[in-house]
Length: 166
Image (cartoon, rainbow, N blue to C red; front, side, top):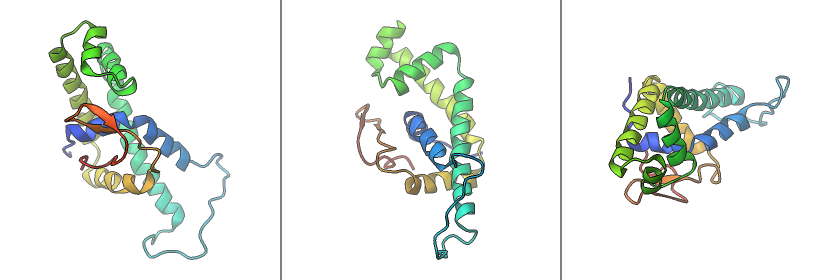
């Protein structure tokens, strides 16, 4: 079981829609789709282009599925806080006001959400999780991972989507 940091969990939660889009983009539109191969095979892809694409898609899909499984296990109140924080991008002060909680309680609940997701992502084998973090930087287009969480500033910024995550 691998250790997943809170920064990695935050990155996954903020970028979950983008990761889903990447998985869908890697999926052929129909089952009869033809995968075109380049004229020459590079030595970096010993199993071929199709196998390489399948392994990339499987590693990303496995992590996305684990995050979604963790989100389903959250209590309804935690799911509401998740939507406010990670989908609506609300700051803690706004979340506290909408949920009728103190900012400290919001922080505690967000910690519980992160721990739940970390538990589910941590169940992925170490080599597959390492492959995910290695491949995600090469698969993501610059516009896909446009959200980057900066825990010090507690706001989102453009660029450097994977800095500080590893």
